Length: 277
Image (tube, rainbow, N blue to C red; front, side, top):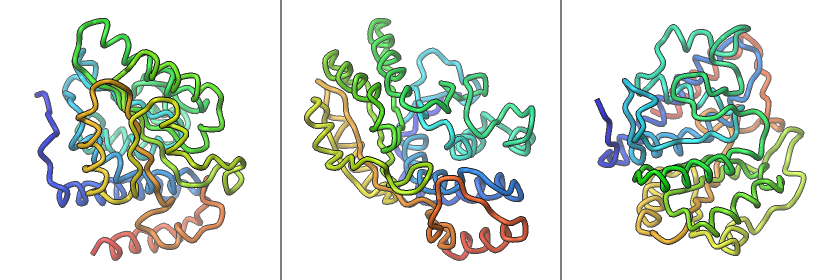
């Protein structure tokens, strides 16, 4: 059954965001460490993308006329797997193997996992692949669109700006980038000051919206505005909070790769539940 996801109300999307965060926390529980903070931070973006923007068929992840979602930050895999489970591409048996040796759901994505478009992990390459997909779809005469998620850390990669320049030159109006600006990378705060991020993208010829990436209503409005742009690529600068929904994780100073004591998971999940209520 083909799913068209353009009529989901913001209130329903907030419930979807919470469901994604809950699933992520249970997936990561007792692993001891992982990229859970980024996953929690990007949940609202993924809820809007998958339950309002994308056209897909959960029964046929390779459906040729699907819209494509490219997760450039492969280490955000816990968030993508949570979405794929929510829409029925992955099942509970799959999810239970997340992060285990030999699992088809590694901590950084690879493209053999159903519903995953690219192999992640080596950062700075997702946007270039998204540009290629957008051009290929246009050459094939298909009206499918491509949405690429990338991080503010990837803006320090020259390949990202080469891709941005190419997309504008080729007028890839079927391409939308979402930049997760959470202000962190591996060892703490951003190494290079990338601000003003929005102005940089605008100078490369992109249509730009800048929003609170944890505000579902603002995200919906941004996508709606950009949907009317038909002559150039689009980008949403999404300012997100790592660990969103779990105050203890939000307060962690080193949030890129979070280490959690086994006995701590229950209290963190309780925080999430109470914060939603």
